[in-house]
Length: 358
Image 1 (cartoon, helix red, strand yellow):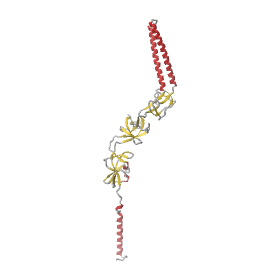
Image 2 (cartoon, one colour):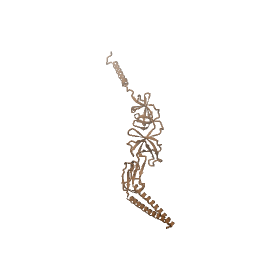
Image 3 (cartoon, helix red, strand yellow):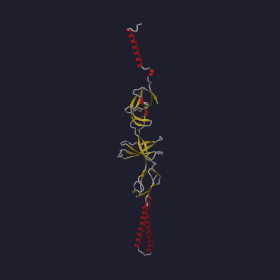
Image 4 (cartoon, one colour):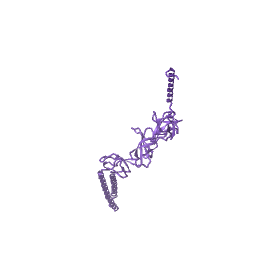
């Protein structure tokens, strides 16, 4: 045993301490197997083909027949019996004109008719009396012919007066404007006291038994033939294209289209309300349906994560439509490929995972 204070002993102690420090560093650089992070589990789903794309549009519920209401005669409006949004039945009174002039005209026409009928009666009696005298040769044939012509003229006067009297009575009846069919008053334009002309629009009455959705489509798009209106109850009300405008709107450059609703209609659908319309577009490229949780927005473009041989790889996609639970994407990949359904924000390229198939 060497003394501690000798140079040889001090050299051995220094070497021993260095070995201890080196062995300690090597042990701390390699964590024990139980300290390593386990390979995470990820829930996966298979890509599924999606059906045709249904584009969303905002539409307005309109009546199939929207008839402007107007008088057949001119006059001053005395009463208005309707308001906008009011429902009316067939035969309900809508407007009434001031009838004082009409009543005077009708009374004058009736008096003219009575005077013409009295003149005809006198002429007819005189003709019958002269016919008896001609048989006895008391008057000439020329006199009888003159009386026959007078009787024809009097009869014509009666017919003319009768027609004028009927016209005056009709005008008196036209002073009351009644609903030709049941419906909802969508617009009222005039007020009592206003003088209106023949055919001037007073209100618009829409028939609510045949509803349509008015949609404005972007220029250059091919109008879909069919679609549906989603209801708050979760049901879908089918619609079909009835007509498309012959020219684009000069201001918005959009095309007005009318889609007929296939009844029966729920009470929640009222004229003038705005509804969401889904119109099925023709499938031009393959698309897939994925859960919303499968989309990763961390990159410059949306992406999904493919699972292959225990590792994940990101793949950029184009989002076509977003629903409440699923998204429709366009990507060049086969259906049935497994992708990560949840937790994509925790993944990194090449990360090892274990699949938990949904």
